[in-house]
Length: 460
Image (cartoon, rainbow, N blue to C red; front, side):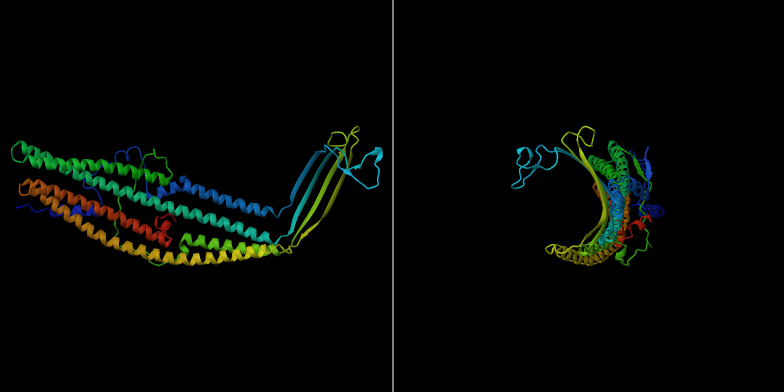
């Protein structure tokens, strides 16, 4: 009859199992040694400074600020200087019917061979109805770039948290797999000794050897997956892949009394905020097109120099026989749009249609957010229920495995029973850890759907 399992030991195991802690401590060789430890929050903070997507988004923010400066520049005086030098290879003639030019020519030369001019002009905007709209649009664009930076940051935080959880689960799977490998290897060593003494069968040794080899192969495969998961985490952080890091948060604790938000507030979603900003930009575009019917008034002042002569030069000298003069003027320029073939009207109608489209897109986004929140909450609740069943399965599989070990040692069960019990335990452990990953991913998805992801990750 099998020896009863020590209930105190079983209880300790279940507590450790709930926390996904290994039965035997294993160091993360290749990662923990000479590595920098990162919490999830520290990984995200590192990414905020090093992730290329976030850097590109921040450059867009700077771009928006320069757009505002560009629009403001229209309110300041505009100064231009123009220069010109001309060599008339053939000087134009002025032909006057019935007039005989001196020397028998066909006409009178219009000017000289060489011409130069230099002028400067200052203009100042006085009335321009589109200026205020342009400044508002530039500020609205800057707000849009800022919101897009938040969106990129939020998505990066989500990717990092997902990658971080993936590494945790793979590490724990690897630890549990190594525990199973060690147990199987010890049983194999005892069975080999028993076989040499004529107590065990050869087939028992071979079955256990095959199972040991399979576990060893899975350890190698899982180690490779863990390396890839670390690389993915470093990629999301914007960290060079050759850097060595380790996780400071190595246990995902299931909080039985965890409260989860259910209220939907679309204003919290960055996608909704971006959609509203785009709607504001579209409305400003409509106003700007409407103001293109308004007149504009600009003040100007100019000063110029003009010189002409038969000899090469830019300015008059004592020997080049140049004629030169200066001119200047000040005034106002009034521009009143009258008719443009209904182009402005068409642009206004196009802009109004785009505004209606954006409004419908916002309504569609609201519906999509409500659906996303509902689905993510249902997924979280479903996964929460599943994990309780998976936890119970692990406990049962562990109990069966321990009993089968005892029975095998006593000769009551076969090596086949022991291998099958170990396989069932391994499958239950893997299913539990995968379900735990699904649970944390579902929680991430739900917080993201509510627009609370950065708060949930304690970044706000």
